[in-house]
Image (cartoon, rainbow, N blue to C red; front, side):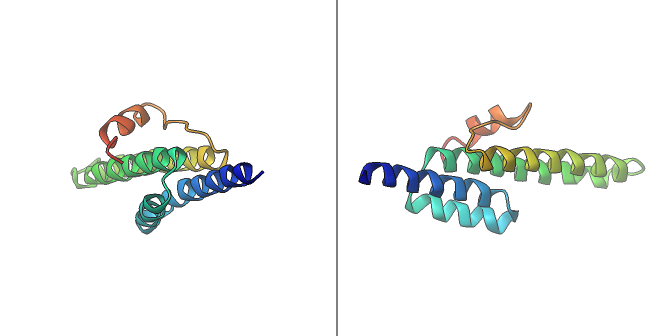
Length: 114
């Protein structure tokens, strides 16, 4: 009985870390700290996805500096990042280790140290 309660607590901790990791840069830092004290595979997975989305968003943010079409490109990039965040949050809420389409597999490789 105690083992089941412990597994349930770990699952809820992992879910909380996973969800918090997608909520702004401060949430990502908080999730890293939370997961450091009680690491879970779900938490680590979503932290890697969230870091990847954040880095991807920063890289796409440079598109706004392109003269002429930069504004349009940055708005399209913003929509893509928003969709990635929503997909990540939905997977976290459902306790799934589901990668962000197209680039999620790279995030898992690049940030495997977490």
